[in-house]
Length: 252
Ligand code: NDP
Image (cartoon, rainbow, N blue to C red):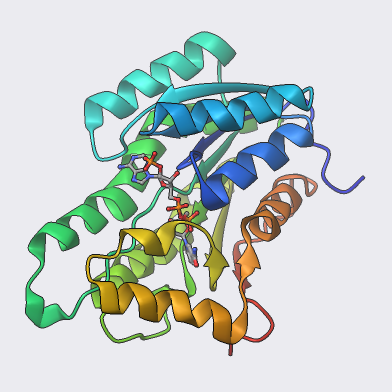
């Protein structure tokens, strides 16, 4: 099988819904133990129950990636339950488009703190684990979920795109530090994917416009992204898919 992950221990952020939930389900289905992080306890428990019903091993850890203490406490909880981890999926994110001249510094701050600093907080909490796993000769993966918005320009998405460009840049830059220590870094850039991401948009017109894109070109399913994450993490240790850009076929 191409995606055997038995013996691996994973952390997935933003695992309460969408891509993160699908990734957690898929990694557990491939044999990994999975710690699921997000803010909504009830939604995490639903995903964990599904994993356990399928015979997998999973743990829900309520965490807010914008809060240092919360991420630290989550890492402690993961380490207490599972010990060291070797696969970290930085997926938690928010997309809050609006015209720049609306000056929504509240939304800008939240996107930066979740999508960029959140990734760094999670990285800080688990870097030691990844480096140690690799030093022991085991596979070690950092997977960051960016977006095609990192380099495709959409009106009203300037700040969201900037946060994702930061994630893409970070992923590339981190390889310079981690690659020589055998820790793989993979940057995933999805196109339109059917999740809850667009439901948080503040403004009915923009929300409907984004929802309408799905009718026009269809979308990837969260499971399609999960499949790719399972694939990259299960390659032989010397093979690092460093950049994965994936879109629905009809999205050009
Ligand atoms: P969802 O809204 O379904 O999932 C986002 C997840 O992030 C939720 O589980 C949410 O859980 C979690 N989250 C949000 N804020 C925080 C926080 N402060 N701390 C911890 N967890 C948080 O959308 P997607 O699955 O689409 O999004 C996943 C990633 O995919 C995002 O980074 C997004 O930018 C990226 N992406 C999505 C695309 C798409 O078309 N859907 C395209 C390109 C990239 P909770 O609210 O419980 O904390």
